[in-house]
Structure formats: C-alpha cells, structure tokens
Length: 200
Ligand code: AMP
Image (cartoon, rainbow, N blue to C red; front, side):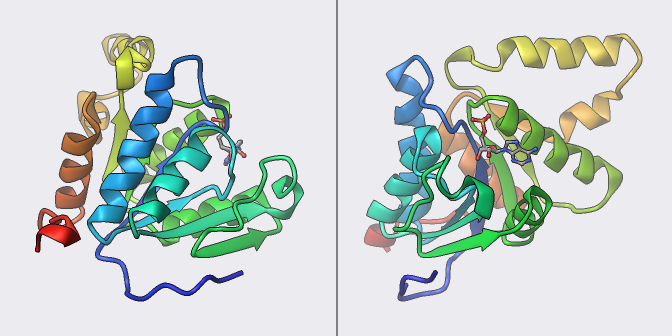
C-alpha cells in the first residue's frame, strides 16, 4: 500500500522500539521526539509498521512532521500489531526474516529505543551483522531514562569476562539524548548534519 509523498528522503533511519508504550510517559515522549526530528529534516523512518506502543508514536510523529514512513510488517502480525495504514508505504511481507531484510535494506542507520524482546533481537542483529561486516551502517542505542543501563553494564561485563572486544562495544553509539544521537548516526552514515526544512 502506498500513500503519495512529494519528495525523496534526505536520509533514512530504521527505528526499533517497543510495540508497548512502557510504564513511563517519558518513553512515548522520546519516541515522538525521534519521529519528529526525522520528519522535520525531510528524513525517512523505516520501522515495523505497527500502530501500537512506541512504534505507533514514532511513526505518527514522523508523519505529522512531514516525514516519509516505511512500515514493514509480516502478514501474520497485521491484526495483532495493528498495521499502520497511514504509512507512506506499508510493505506487508510473508516472514519475519523478510521484514528484517527489507528494513535493513531501506535504512542508512539503525536506532534502538526502549522496547522488549523484539527490539532487543533486532538491535543485536543489526549490531552483530555490523561486526561481521555484512553492513557498515551505524547502530545506535537510545538509553532513555537509564532504561538500558543494566544492559550496557552487562555488555561491559562481557568485555571484562573475555567474550567480547572493546572494539565491538564501540561499534554501538549510545546516548541518552535523542537529538544528539540522531545527529551522530546521520553524520556517521555520511550525511551532512540535516537542517529542519522550515529553517532552510
Ligand atoms: P517488542 O520490543 O517485543 O515490543 O517488539 C517490537 C517489534 O519487534 C514488534 O514489531 C515485533 O513484531 C518485532 N519482533 C519481535 N520478534 C522479532 C524478531 N525475531 N525479529 C524481528 N522483529 C521482531
């Protein structure tokens, strides 16, 4: 399904985040900030195509700010995750593997926001593929309100315990501020710092 959109995107960010809203309003607020940042700069959001939780909030904010939004959702989840019919493009695929492949292909960078096991799985896959050399796209982790503190601590423990190299850990850009992190990712993906379209 395609809804018309006037211009090609300036950059494209794949966002992984919760299909639930989380216990704090701050999680939804940061998802909306991320979507708005992308939309206001003429960017494209690629995400899992759902309307629930943080996924819906990031997409709605990007669309409201004039961004292009590609949602990629397996047929089996169209009802369960409430497929977002307002996406600029909603790609309904057959398998989870196809979903992840298309999301990755359409993105210049990956960004994980707070979420659950689906988010973790997608984030770790983007990271492991990067360290294996399957892609060279930057991978970011938004540590909103300390949500990922314990995970980051565990990852450091993994380095100390000799199961991971410091260099692997450094492949992930971690920040607690959405705008700083988005700027870093877009920059690392080889784009100039994007301006808000209404300021150009
Ligand atoms: P969650 O973080 O668990 O709320 O899930 C966020 C999104 O990740 C949802 O759209 C899930 O369908 C998706 N998801 C769950 N498991 C996987 C998986 N194995 N691969 C890719 N996406 C997944």
